[in-house]
Picture (tube, rainbow, N blue to C red):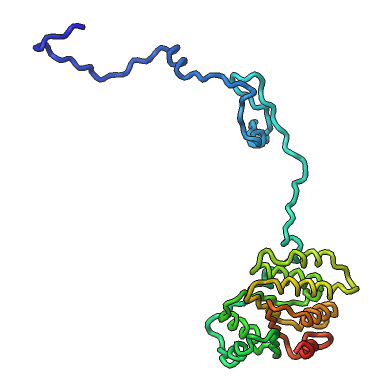
Length: 275
């Protein structure tokens, strides 16, 4: 290696375009090894998302060709099988069940009923409480204010004329309890699905529910049936409630709000017997 003399001027390279490499060198640097067909890893849905668009026409599927591969990858036709629907408990519930199970939330500008709230609290240890008044007297508002003071699970069921069916009533009641206890009532659910009109289905369903409610951990659950007059005249539901009251479980407190125009086979006939 020759060392230049110390007094020689230092020559720096002048800025300018970098000389281009030969074409063969560039190609060699960017060349990728060909893929081997058996080792290709592609999404299973590749043929569903790859398409060839023709001018003036809709997209059409084409075979996927990979350079260097042994054979082009054929397009996969979309599956024509009917997708399997996952069965859930909510699928068997009637429409609008969730709105029936939502607890009312009255606004701040409501008439306070301290005497009624005190009476409800004073009888909190009673298993059954009836709140009877005509329409518009504030039964729902009073109960909604009362449940705010509770420190235990509350199931609110706003009844409608469409609930005057034993199976519908039991399904909605089960759905409400499962909002607080998600794994509750598998035996009761099976009994509801197997129930048939007539016979002693109401007594069997009520007994099954009473047994499973009795197994709940303390302090249990409060069930509020609002607008009970909508279903009071339905005999199977009357038989169901009568059996439930005779076999009343320790893990349940029942509060029923209804109008004073109850007729037929209704809950008030059985509260006296239960008391």
